[in-house]
Amino acid sequence: MKRTLAIIGFLVLVCACAAPDKKPVSEGLLVNDDEKALWQQALEEQKNLNESAMIYRDRQLEEYLNSVVHRLQPRDLPAELSLRIVVVLDPSFNAFAFPNGVIYIHTGILACMDNEAQLAALLAHEMSHSIHRHTLRAYRHMKADPGFMASLQNTLAQVAMVEELARFLGVTGSMAAITGYARELEMEADVSGLDYLITAGYDPYQALHLFEHLKEDIEAQQVKEPYFFGSHPKIQARIDNVTNLLETKYADIRSGVKNTEIFSDKVSPVVLENAGLELRSGRFAAAQRSVEKYLRLHQSDARAHYLMGEIFRQRGADQDAKRALAQYQKAIAYDSAYAEPHKAIGLIHFKNGQRALARKHFESCLLLDPDTPDKAYIQGYIKQCVRDGGGG
Amino acid sequence: MRKLIWVILLVVAGCASGMQTGAQPETFTVNAPKGWRKINTPKYYMITKDGAFLQYVLIQERPIDKPFLYTKKKLRPNMLPQEVAGVVVDELSTDRTIIQFELLENNPASIKGNEGFKLLFTYKDRDGSSFKTKYYGFIRGGIYYNLRFTAAKRHYYEKDEVTFDKFIETFRIVKP
Image 1 (cartoon, each protein chain N blue to C red):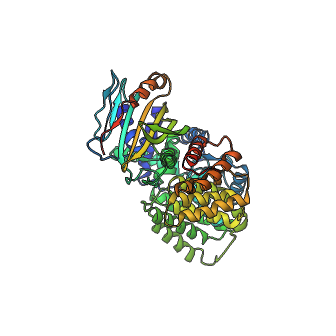
Image 2: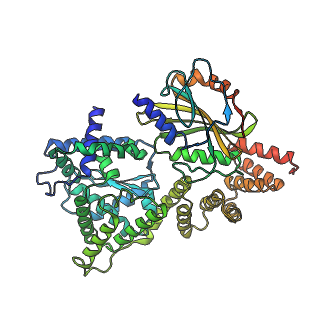
Image 3: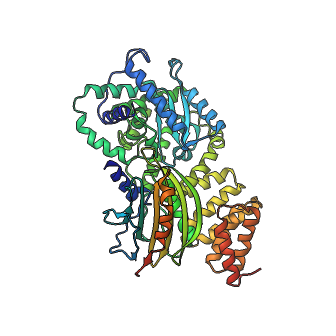
């Protein structure tokens, strides 16, 4: 069964690169067996993903995200299609929707947004894929295309390079998350999404700002255009398309709801969490931007100052040690029981040969957190400090 | 065969922390345990007893300025072993080719007189098989050395762990 599903998955991936059925699906939702099978497959993929360690769990945030998508959803949404948002712990710019209306959004793209209108623009685009049954249309096109085998080799190569996310995805999720839909379907989602966005009263120009954030990330990472918004078609074409719509069809709409404050309040924990992921990936500039963004709202957050210190210490550029020390001192000032900054200060002094200072902070760290995972390292440093004459 | 290719891919691309040594010939000597055979890989010293998909020992030597595959962090000559370990753990945990990476241990270690670190971790491959790895690493003379033992979590890890520990004792850097 798994093998069969995997093969179907590959086939659907292939079809994602091909032109889809341009006609909307006319029959009722879940009337035909192929759509039922896709939904069943989607449920299985979601189960795998939801049970993985990749899911960011925050009930308040989920409630907020769901409230935004519910504001966007059309009144005639079929009862079977239950729109719901799940957050994936991943610093990349990505979001994807399953045919049954479950939308996965990465922390990376959430963290870069400025307001609720940008979030709504993203969700409106993604929910359009579900509402307009893009997975089913792509799947049916594949079945009708006898030449799909020619593309299989290429697609397999793509699958081999995809991320951990792909391990949990098959037929439906891979297409939505990794390869993207065909050009026509992405364009349709843009047009439809913009309509949902405006109907809900959001500022449609924020959709363009979201694209700009994506472009900045692409340039900063010096990578080829990523999956969301990027794969089909190219991002500039999408920007041009949305801009054209705003200047013509929606020319009389000049502004709308942004909800910046509530968005920042709800999403800021994700910003800090994502900064940690960016630091782990060595994306120092992105991590720094994220922590700075977080600190603008939470100036006295010890954890954020510590993380900023870690960014500087690990980056190791000129003057970074000095910058790191300043951040660690702030972290301690805001939380005197916080052990980690003491360890980090100890490391900087230790490397500079300031053994007495290093020892003092290493000992403080162990005093505050006797079971710190770095205990063996720290005990070794203290011994060396004593040996080198850095006694207390 | 497909599994073996996958193991090698895993070593080259992911679990191996993206090491591309290019350091030829080897700057070390070791004595392979009896009954273990060398796997013909161009850039790594790799041996196995029952097949690389069941267990293997791998030694890599790479210039410290070589970039990793996943994390953009870099090794530096003045790094403490703990800092080197931190970069390696970041590489492993952001590795796209392994899933459910779990670090069980990260401690200082001396590898034949070289101050370094020891990691113990588990992960799953794309087929869902569980593996456990004991990993030693250290920097010497501009080269980052790592010696690891990876085996199927059940049975093979326990069976061959002692062999790996004894094997490490035969490790000698001959140059620089």
